[in-house]
Amino acid sequence: MRILLPPSEGKAVGGRGRPLAARPAHPLLGDARAEVVGALTGLVSGDAEKAAAALLLPPSVRDAALAADAAVLTAPTRPALQRYRGVVYDGLGVDALPAAAQRLAGRSVHVFSGLFGVVRGDEPVPDYRVPAAAVLAGVGGLATFWRRVLTPLARDLLGGDLLVDLRSTDYAAMWRPGRADRVVTVRAVSRLPSGGLGVVSYNSKFAKGRLAAALLCHVADGGRVGGADDVAGAWRATTGNVAEVDGHRVTIRTDA
Image (tube, rainbow, N blue to C red):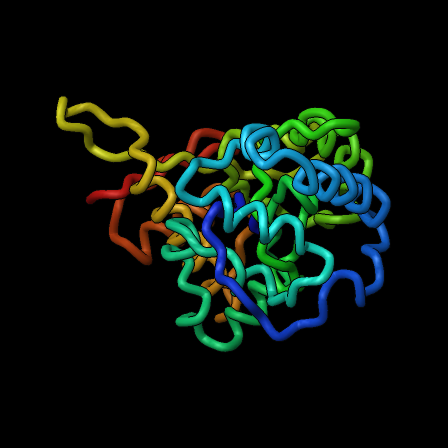
């Protein structure tokens, strides 16, 4: 089983790992990453307002984000699952998982990234802020760029295991599964004030993080996740909430 997650705009700062400039290039994504990093560093070395607009940076984080992006090659790194912070990662709570589940997360969680394409949970990354919706000169829209790169490499990057796809829309656009891929997609819905069901951003993100944690613990304890029924069962067993299966799609309820 592999779990596909979006990144988060918020990230932990600092780290103790060697910077990217002191690490070997990724064997499959090295050239593509170098192309995006080159476009990024060229962008942030110029006009700050232009760079902030291209990177979709809100004013409240502009200066810090541009400084982080300018230093992506020389800044200290930390494992991806310790770098990303945000609602999904609050739900995942990787630091509170049992040791076996943490080790499994390091090799089984894959985070889609506007800057790096895909990073494994234990892969060291610096602080940065580069959304998949950004457009960089010479590279173009990052979702489209990475889709061209990742499509022929997906099997080598993600393996042939079952993929539990918890990505958000922008990051799902970076790679779309083919017919031969074994993928379970997940939608998280909540009860709305109107009485109907719909996606509430915070609830959906947190629930997807909780589901990832439940799946990791289940597998680390010797359980099997072979399809949509197993994904739904892990949610029900962990939360007591409803999970419905429709083919390869699972809809989980964030409330009972």
